[in-house]
Length: 434
Ligand SMILES: *Cc1c(COP(=O)(O)O)cnc(C)c1O
Image 1: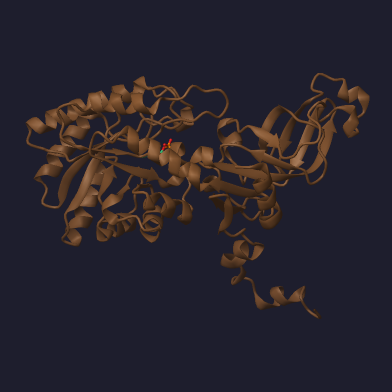
Image 2: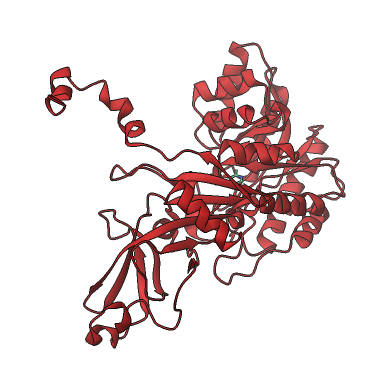
């Protein structure tokens, strides 16, 4: 997206602000679809990466389905126009009411993550005299070689069931009057940059699918999860063509529709977080740039030490470091070890509140705009309101035009669920005479 456009977005909608390039999202979706075009396939966008209704609607219009991890996400998908037969529901902790609503909504299938959950689904299906389409999430015990917090395919992780147990669940489901095993699923982690763990996973799970065939359990869907990484810093990324070929190879001899659940791959690179500089400050040798966004807007650096490249929009002078003497720093500090490196931090009362660490920045003034890259996935979707900070607004850009897709949260939105519990006297005290 052009700098001038981003600047005018910040001027029009304020900061902090998320801006997503919808044309980039389309291009990513097309690339994914093309990689799998040789086979029956369905791309179910993993909503949790960015669940904005307009983003879902945009992807749905191109044919995407939805991978949901709560009934709220299922509702978002349905509201945004995703057909029910393209919606799947995953997650280790589905509540009874979520299962019930998913069955009543008649979505494609539920990904089952434990024996206890399978039994729960069966009894809920029975109570409404419906047959629940299910798929078992298999944990293939493979090291996805990603950050431990986003690795999900090892037995030490809470996700899925091991291969032997999965087989038992299929045999049970096959016999049940209220369960219909239609698919098989695995998802070994997120931000994957190596192909081989995924292919190994696919091979292991395909073996299971073959052995189920021998038991006359024919599955229609083979769900290979999501997890394709993007380049935040200098990571090598997985080539989509190799990915698709590897999956197709592993699934030889199985007549199945391939389901993919990409989240990050589709939206991460489309988005930026715009924030304004408030202050610069120096503690001994360290330089801090304090901005109007914080960890409540973008959690990834705090949560995973993730790196989002940052640049100044319309920077005046890239020669000098942020803490160089021109920007008013005492020379003694400017000559210190960290003279041109700064931490970019927010206003939240936590030392873990940072958006970037040790980055070289030019001298900045109050009101200068910073742009954090690759913030389209797990950015706004992880935002919260800690420190009573209303969440940012979101803007879409298509054909060079910007449009609001989520209003900036207001203080009133934050307090509304609490306000009614105040006694009327308390409410009036400070407004008397106004
Ligand atoms: C999070 C998740 C995804 C999407 O992961 P990405 O890394 O964003 O592609 C897909 N499937 C399941 C089950 C998930 O939990």
